[in-house]
Image (cartoon, rainbow, N blue to C red; front, top):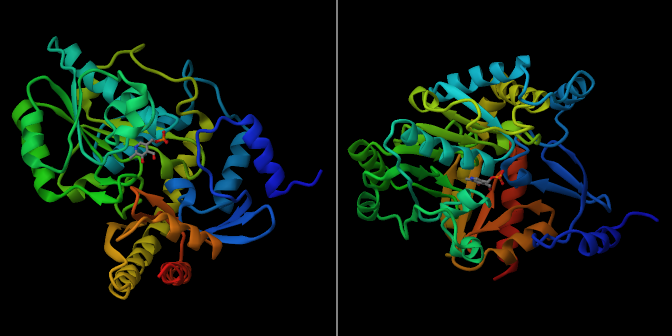
Length: 398
Ligand SMILES: Cc1ncc(COP(=O)(O)O)c(C=O)c1O
């Protein structure tokens, strides 16, 4: 039987749990910023697997390294040493200014580990603190802990009761943050640019309140840089740009460039409170994952980082021009580096659908925001193509 879109969809809908609302397209191949569907149609991919395929698809250097590692050694578990975890941890500590790394497999796991490490920090000192204060519009994952600090009620409500002690603010209200953070707060959770929440940066007054509340109460700061980190915004972390110096940072997505990698990088004073047996994972930091992340970091150093920053400046110029000429259809352009959000006056789904029909992959987030997460290897030519298609897609709906 030949594989067609219909045969793929029919089989999935019979056997795969219906947890996703998929777009009607099945991809079978990729190259650079392009994807190809089962009928051979080409698309420009400005979602990059939700910020994961940072080096684009089928990157020749990464593919060669993965093949080499697969034919050498993929996995041994965390019962034994191997040479690559220490190497990657050294790179991540140098890049973040923090002292120690823990490896896992996804953003959710990294956030879950951050919550555990923060509680462990206080428990070890004989002053247990259980509370977490998280921000409006934040998204941190689907496990019980990560859900507890995630903002949107529709993610949380069906699974209540969640982890006790989580307070999620209703709005970007510095005063409410100050009131919520007290002497029982283990940590404040911050996503420096809230990606799923509509590509919303933390307003300066709110980050000032976070820093002040942390100083006043001793509450740790956890930065969820799963989406905004790993060079996505042009710097390795986004926290610095919003004036925050975190005690723990969660990383994933772009760091593995397509290979599942999660990491927590933390300050020594937190690391010192965690003992063998407190936390762990079978796969985390295996040879394949570490090798992929090390390769990603090398490729960014070797020039992709510089070209990405140039292309980003060009992309934001073009998006702002598009917004100015949109007759009010685009009400705001937000983001940095290779994450951009176009806030529309109306629902974004018709626009992302019209873009897909024209061969551009972008996605809707937070209802009325078109999110762009281009791969770091995108060129000015790719940006021109994407913005031209978005202009057409917006025009088609008038
Ligand atoms: C900021 C943030 N944190 C955590 C997560 C969860 O990561 P994962 O889907 O890899 O478990 C996501 C995923 O979109 C995210 O954007």
